[in-house]
Image 1 (cartoon, rainbow, N blue to C red):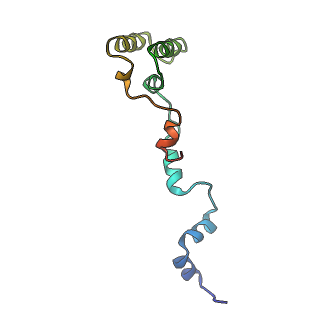
Image 2: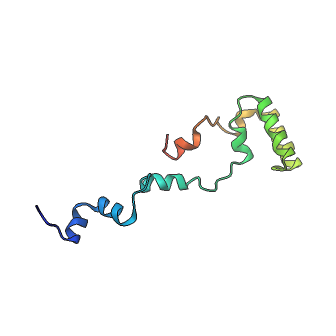
Image 3: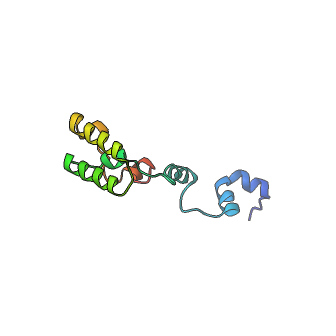
Length: 107
């Protein structure tokens, strides 16, 4: 059996040493950093509108956010004007299901 001192063990097996010293995580540090990218992230009205497939869905979303106090009347009017004049995709390309998971590299 070969004996290694602590420094040699650390040199040969840096990841294993780090896991032993700091505990094993379900995510690698790279994945954890990507998840943190969306920590405390609150979607904006534009994020919600980019999930809509139709102008009707977008209108319902605007009405809902206005009713809940998430947007002002002026903001709702501006959004409706843009929707009617420039179309739904003027808010950006459609965000598909799993968008945030893919952005975080988890899907």
